[in-house]
Image 1 (cartoon, rainbow, N blue to C red):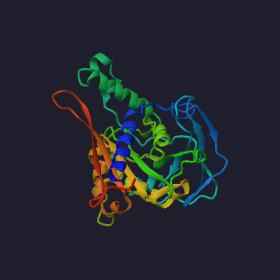
Image 2: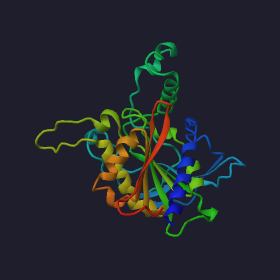
Image 3: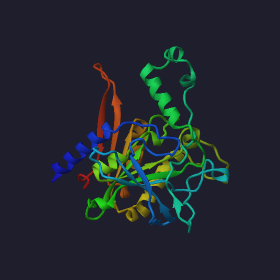
Image 4: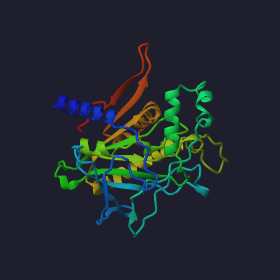
Length: 310
């Protein structure tokens, strides 16, 4: 049984590694892999109010079943005004349904100045491939706003008849290209939700100065740092409170990150006594550059005493 779970995860990881990075279509804010999009009529009642998502299908011949997507659900109050440089606060309850059909703005991000230079000049600092990737990522992050603490949820279509007993396993995917730039929408994780028969949660969180600047506060206010990590703790708390209404299993939550998210966010959160009781499994993906070239390395972090039951 243990090896079946391990094999399932290896297949899961392989599929994720093959998911192509796409820039979302700015005109209608939907992933490039979607074929048809239809608004859902029945809202999902979360603890903080109802949300209305969309039903999306994939191109014929893809072998993927459709999904339900809920884009731009607030998991905290906007961190603006008096709440800037403050820990995330529980969102206010709304009686009217939120139309969750568009990706939210990215949190403010700062890209290296070389991405705006001619390629011949910028290539002196960055390899050409890395420069093309950075420009691709920058284009995906043009829509930015400090009001950015939202998450996106991708759920396999329940009409497919594949809902597991107890609910879908949940994968919280953290984008992590850099501490100063890392737009979540470059990752089209909807095929992963369909193929893996899991719920994928894709959150925005503060990075750069707004997320990791250390501030010296007056004696009247407690000093708080690493706000980006606190945002992610708020994401996981929201998942524990609400994922069951999306047919998710609160006891099967996996945290997955790549790049900076693997090196820092996932590891720090997996060790946090606040997060660990609610986290069933964590995985990280990073690049290593040995003498024979770059390769991907995956690390799995199960609970200390047993493999996660995913």
